[in-house]
Length: 308
Image 1 (cartoon, rainbow, N blue to C red):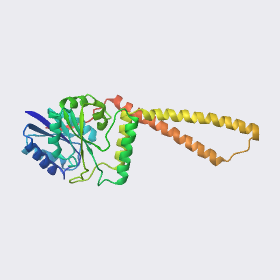
Image 2 (image 1 turned 90 degrees about the horizontal axis):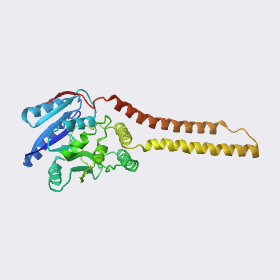
Image 3 (image 1 turned 90 degrees about the vertical axis):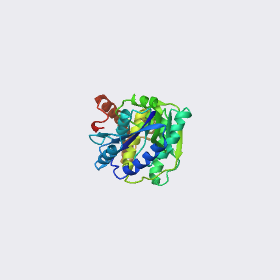
Image 4 (image 1 turned 30 degrees about the vertical axis):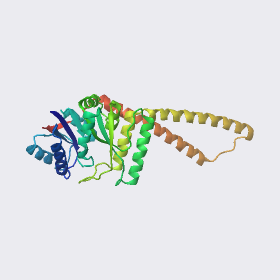
């Protein structure tokens, strides 16, 4: 019998885990053609998440877990879960029930009988999400798709069903700075997209603040596009050209009208603008240099404290 590994990254999900387990167990009961493996990854939770998972383990031998020594982030948890998973198929999903477990049956049919290698999901609506957050999220997807050679669907979730071949391809990318949505797209394979309306968390609070999402978006852009580096070069060329024109204008102005003293406010504004552009370009270079620095250290993506 084929095995399906359900990988569930968890960070302070004590409240919602019992609800999630009940739902995923119901789905497992309806798919008799598959043997389930529930793999929870405790990402350094500070609440009782690990204790709840251990209770599941005691009553259900299908439950396994990996517990980190500290919080390494969701990307590390996904990577660890994929490495631990032993199933013929693997599905990644959040514990907050924003990823409907009921879709697993449809995902399995698409991969098993329709010739797809992967089934991915995306939200068709953003109901319940703050308007500002939705606006910037859409801007990110549009910007990313324009400057990157790969494409990410607007509203794409990490919730996806994959064959072992797809999982092995993802695991072959051992980079330290990980952006899973980009990695999923980069490895390719035939993918079917399922849409569903936005669902609110069943319990607990989101761990993603606006600032964390902003930093995560920068991670994604710098991980899969070098266009920002080109922007830095373009800015340099543009301002060199403008400086050359200004020199010509000043020479002509001095020859024809003399050299009257100009006000210092305009000069200060120009200096501030050029300084800002320089700092922006240095910052862009710094982002890529920092990634190179971290990769060169060859540190592990995560450290496991205990597993079972």
